[in-house]
Image (cartoon, rainbow, N blue to C red; front, side, top):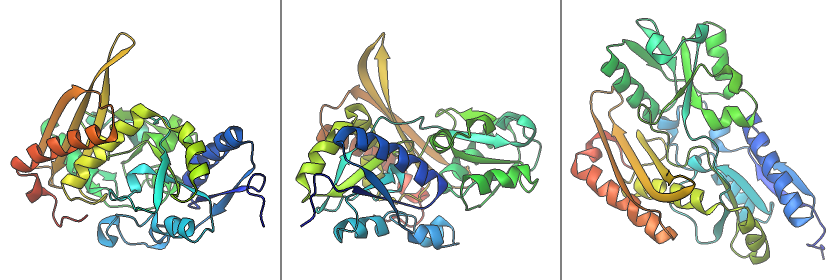
Length: 322
């Protein structure tokens, strides 16, 4: 029988440069925490091999299902996901054992000639595969009197930046966290503030998942958990779930911790749903005490989602999906 106290822990990860980088960072932390070696097990997901847009293939779960199957088959001991890729419904036999401290949740612009969004020329072509980004970029451009064209793209970070450096596009929009994790923040020409573009629910956060039956590992991984990040992303994902929208829907959400001096006083949850042409946005927020439990965070998200639905959010999401 395998000696589980000394054998390497098998950490499942997607094969992309970004996934390998963030999984490697988690692996090192787990090594320090447990004193056990950790080996990366590369797994190809449907989202990695499909060339269709995320909207076409559904988005929800396409980057995580293969990793979850490997966990349930005991082929790996733990998996690292980008939290924004996870479906909002959590399987009973798997546990989100840790949500570490979140990276910068914002989106960023990478544009030719160091341009900011406001400086882009008339008819500028901006690449993004996200309906959420498309809706908000078009709405922002309208508010500024800019004329832009959003162009659907797929590919890893290097590929997307290459569309700009190769002259095919004027700019692309990416997540700040991904660029930070692979050391490419020097390419950023503008950080997009949430007042202009709200990020995807859970953006910038990682999820460390393992089988519910592995109680000892669940307990050890819990030491990596950041309680503030967990309640924030729980509120954001609760809003997404209550809207019955998948992770490819044009929904943005961000829970901020409001600080007075060095004391965290309140949490503000902002949400947005928009038509992809940017003509209509439903954008609301709510502020209250910092949730002391996941249940309170879930209630906060549901409360804001209900208000957004009352304002017509359902009609802006196209086909709604769990």
